Image 1 (tube, rainbow, N blue to C red):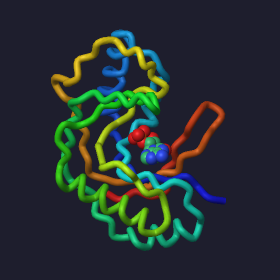
Image 2 (cartoon, rainbow, N blue to C red):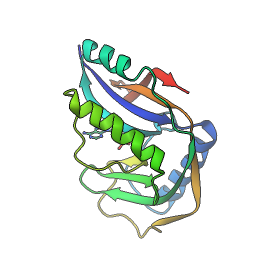
Image 3 (cartoon, rainbow, N blue to C red):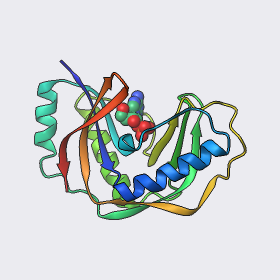
Image 4 (tube, rainbow, N blue to C red):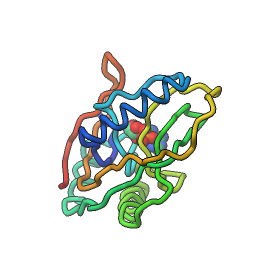
Length: 174
Ligand code: 2AM
C-alpha cells in the first residue's frame, strides 16, 4: 500500500514553544481555525505524495548520502493562503543552501514520478489550518523573528489517525 511521504526539517522543542506562543497571540488577536499541534510543526522541504514500497526503497537509495543543511532560518513573516485556509509563518529570505536542497528533493520527486510541485519553494511552518477568510488585521512582519535551527532532515510519513493527521519519522539525516 502506498504511503504519503514528505521531507522536512524538524522543529526542536525550544522553537516549538516560541511557535506555540505565536499561535496563542494570533488566536487572541481573533484568528479562527484549527491550530496545528506542536508535535506536528515541521518545515516541509518536499512533498512526495503517495509513494509505493519500491519507490520508497529507491528514494532512500538515491538519498542515502543526503547532506542536511547547517543554518538558521529566520521566520519573520505571516502568510495566509486563502484556498487551503493556511496561516503560516514564513521567511522573507530563503537561505541559498536550504532552497537548493528543497529544489533538488522536489526535482528528484518529479523526475521519478512522485508529486511534482508547481510552486517555487517558500519555507514556512503552518500554524493554523482551516483559518477563516475574515482574518483580523495582523502585523505582517514578526518582530523579533523566531529562529529555526536547520541541522537535520527527516523523511516523514503522514497518516490520518483518530485525532487527526499524525506524522511518523521514517529516517533522520543529521
Ligand atoms: P505545509 O503544512 O508545510 O504546507 C505533509 O502532508 C505536508 O506536506 C503538509 O503539512 C504540507 O506542508 C505539505 N503538503 C501536503 N499536501 C501538499 C500538496 N498537495 N502540495 C504540496 N505540499 C503539500
